[in-house]
Amino acid sequence: MSGVEPAGGRWPSTLPAEPGVDLAGLTLAERILSVKAGRRVRAGEVVVVPVDQVMMVDSIAPSALAIVEDELGGVIQHPERVSVVVDHVAPASNVQVATTQQRVRAVARAKGLRLFDVGRGICHQVLMEEGLARPGWVVVGSDSHSTTYGAVAAFGTGMGATDIALAMVTGRTWLKVPETVRVRLSGRRRPGVAAKDVALEIVRRLTADGATYASIEILGATAFGAGERMTLANLAVEAGAKVGLVAPDEALRERYQVPPWLAVDEGAQVTGETEIDLAGVGPVLSVPFQVDNVHPVEEHLGVPVDQVFVGTCTNGRLEDLREVVRVLAGRPVAEGTRLLVIPASSQVLQDALADGTIAALVAAGASIGVPGCGPCMGRHMGVLAPGEVCVSTSNRNFVGRMGSAEARVYLASPAVAAASAAAGVVALPGRTPEAPAVDA
Amino acid sequence: MSGPARGGASGTGAWSRVWRFGDAVNTDDILPGKYAPLMVGEDVFQRYAFAHLRPEFAAAVRPGDLLVGGRNWGLGSSREYAPQALKLLGVGGIVARSFARIHYRNLLNLGIPAFAAPELVDLLQDGDAVRLELDRGRLLWRRAGGEQESLALPEVPGFLREVLEEGSVLAFFKKHGRFPGEVPGGERPDEPDS
Image (cartoon, rainbow over all chains, first blue to last red; front, top):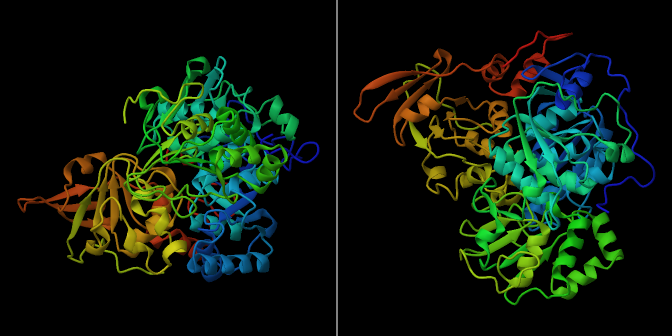
């Protein structure tokens, strides 16, 4: 449903079934890095570990590849473990971008790297669909939302161009083993409460630096689907985390071969633990201009909305698009409001075409964009004018993030985004569009 | 890419100024995504440093200047071109209450000294004259009244000091053929809390 299942059967593991080191009392992050390092390591130690997959996007690949070529001898250790995804400005918005991407394509082909070109989709979604992030793998990406791979208990983390270049050339990277903050989800979600709401509640609880350099170990997500887990892990970085690891469970083992040692040890030493009763989580907004500025949607009902954006690595999957159609329930997009929908990948787009989701969105008045990052970081395909308000399913609402520094971005679930598109103001699903303005 | 010479070596006699920022300065503040090198060119993107937050900064900053921030400096993106822009502008160092992890690593990789030092943040005001003396582990600070004071910088963890001494992680790697903190040819001793 989320486009992240293997075509047939389970993704096999490339990791040893036996850890080879004593893992008793270790967190998920410590377990992964211990097995990779070949010795028992604890939080605070520095390790150098092999990298299973290096991912870079079009905005970083030029400098990372230039470092490889100009500074490090030009030889990439394992080209088959390197993915290049053209998604951040795709298709190219001007000649400058087009020329740079042309160069990146040529280098990627010459060096035998995996190239996912314009339209294939957003890096994190694509790697998951392609089985290029698996349980227990170390995946380093040139994008901070590489924590997304933690949805399948991969040690996914974001790095800059220099680290990406070094990982390509050496096949390894250096890491400080992170402390762990445990988030325990309990109870049952109320109807209409999305994984996005839960993820934002986690960020609110921990705050934007509450998990700095930590691994967030997420327990109790068994009822969350594959795509929903990606949403949870995706937003871990908004609490400052190095990784966000969803505890492996039966559902994960149905899709992936999971090494037996990759399991939560309740006795492991963690630096903090917070429990979230899902029954107490409602629809929320992340209000400008900080992601941890999370409030109930009720507090902002009626704020006029110029644009609604549904997409990104956080919420651009099939289930998200379907949720928009479900909430719209045949209603058109409000006069004066634009609804922009950008599927997270070509696979999502195909599936959404096949089941009628795209047709329903277009009928409601939505614009459909080329699979990729869209306007999320303010470069193209829907940037905002001064004074405009956008309700977005993306992950950042910083000043100027989506265009003008005088625009305001509210982060929300696909359901709240859809309700707001239909109402033309911030709205809740199932409420009348004439909801009174509380904070306009 | 080599930027203007950085201030910071002791004995240069050069005084720099403090640029004071608040809490939660994010990477979109430091270098907005729409001004990435990919978008505007690799030779000019640094001109857009703090384009929204402090538009006068890029034109007025001088080599060696010190940025002072509050909590969680550099949260957000992994974009190395944010610290790269600061390096190209010659920023001598950053002192903040705390740093976001990806950005902190990018700063150190590029050889920009970064110190989590809340007690210094409490003292330093916008426009203050300072001189960063890394090898002596101190910051000389001239108060508004003209009185001079020597402030101790917090110690940098060993594996990061290795990087700073070589100028960047690339320089370190090229010289030593290994990663910082890595002991060649085998097990390395534990370095907890570094």
